[in-house]
Image (cartoon, rainbow, N blue to C red):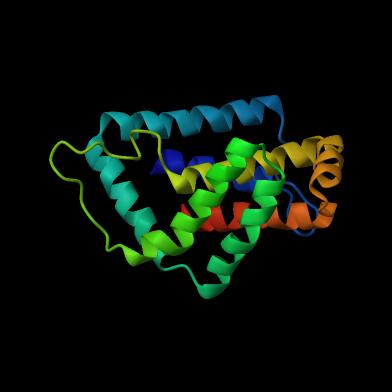
Length: 178
């Protein structure tokens, strides 16, 4: 949990606030530190299945408790994520948003059956793909405004629509995965 908390804190500090401030620059050193902490957390989850299962249960419960406004934010982000991604990644984002906003809400929480592989350990995790992807996009958009201009041109979305959507997802993901 400590590694996850540090990762989230670093991500939050590298993202520019609404007031236009950034606590930490998205420098190569800071990005490398954030990645090292994320890999440490993954390593712990990969070698300790009980820890991974507990984390999955806590995050799934937090997702089930999303407010209507947060669910709407996720749904509204889907076409933006799809528009700024390549075809395969856009399809994954669409499936992940559908799962998080509808399908998982119909299913009661469950424990793994004997012999069943934990999807978190297998690398299939909708939450991680969406929120980690949004955080990475946010950092790139801050660092390289030319990318933002190109994405805006290709998608037909305004710069502010793209920024608001991506940073909104980063905030939601940070709040959820604390």
